[in-house]
Length: 319
Length: 319
Image 1 (cartoon, rainbow over the protein chains, first blue to last red):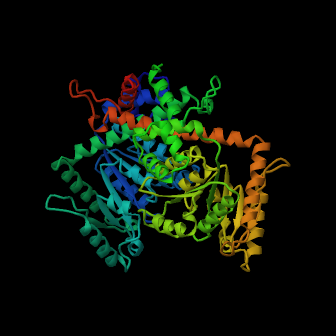
Image 2 (cartoon, rainbow over the protein chains, first blue to last red; image 1 turned 135 degrees about the horizontal axis):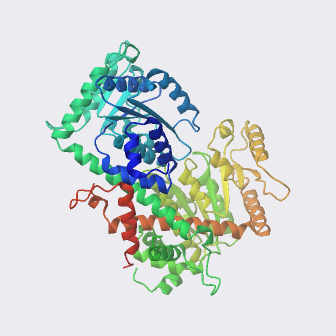
Image 3 (tube, helix red, strand yellow; image 1 turned 90 degrees about the vertical axis):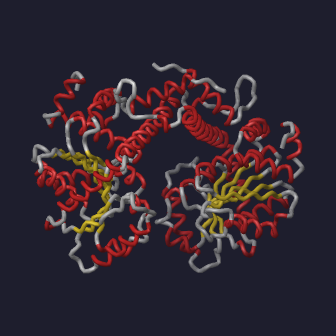
């Protein structure tokens, strides 16, 4: 990948093989990947980012695939970033890939990228956003983040989206009250999948109660509830309709740009803190910190030692 | 608390009221508290620190109190730092205090300090260590950390000790395999409380299996299992005996000083990272980070922006 940055930018517009290699490079997180991300950033901002999450088995993958296919039928290019934090190795993600590939993976306008955790979830959030920037610069119109909604980091991933969809099934209804509050709060709207089951009405009532409990006035966005039967491809157009309704709300209320600025700031915060801590302990290995000073036998307190390390770090120059 | 640092050091040796005020000051975490901790640090290192943890209801408080009373009977001064992370307010800790006070709190040679979380557990670990330093400098011979063993931060707290005791009851036996692995791994030895119950033998067999699974050779420390009936004050001297056995092992194997150096380094690490991140965002408020540059309309990538912020921070001088 020793191509000129502008050549990379040109090639990823049309060449899925090159795009795949750039994605891998960016995911591997080295100096070159940062250079590429810095260059590509100027071409980002055009893709609309949608996050899909929900409990395991709710049908997120099926709905994500069908939504991708729907946007594709409108002539749009769609990228899917599927994050599987429950799988410690790539096994789960790879299996998911194979199922997906046979379904929509052969479409030239759809690119599917799976990520699996290797221990550190924070890094996964950062890299999911980096990959999205590459897709954005490569001219993809929609970027769909899909992840199971079980922990804070998964919520962070879908919060990197302009619109966040929480997918539930009627069975989730009983436990909705007990569900991770965060999952209910991040929803820009809900999808109730398998809505032909008898308990669907009850689940909708429960969801309406939760939505009604949000503080709101006339200008507040209130999440809709879209009923789907993904196995029969029912309700997908309605999901796309609700995405459009939310997009219009974001634009008319100025929230679109406000949200993007806030997400940019959060991203900068994460990068700064990771970088500074990494750089610091590279310069002053923790193992060299000793109790006391061998010359004068006067032990330095942890706070005094900390202050000295910070001072020395600030005096170090950029390489 | 505008006393000269040396006067503070002198007074906390004998005056429990002044000691209490210094502890509160240190807990409140300001510039003055750091000054005090820096000064007192040279007088620390003499106290032996013991951590006690285990599942709720195992009898940790009773055992901690009786161990304190035992050391007191040998003429030693004992400080107890009781951390109750399950209580979001001071309620739980205060109630515990009152029970304790009526038991051993009137003893001039015993000082009990309760801490309750107010949201951030990381900070609690740091402050528990700061309080221990004050007790150490004040001439206390033993510092007992007591906390319920339910999460990582609680493990961090007891890991600040020279010897870590995990207190279980026979009922814990059934679920020992399923218990948080960390809790079993940090134990320098186990206390099986309520050991007169029928299922005690079974629990001991389970514990022995777990201990046997640790990698070991002839020179490795192998945790003992001490049987107690705390309500009848049975087994407390045996706990003290196992503490002594462990202390002798630490000294003869050089682990004592190695462990203390490692803990010092971990503490410096935590302080440096908290300080640097706090200072950084004070100097460069995150809210001022904008997408792009309004002058030239050329958007900067998050990585480029992060690099600039780190550079500016390193160029800033200490106040």
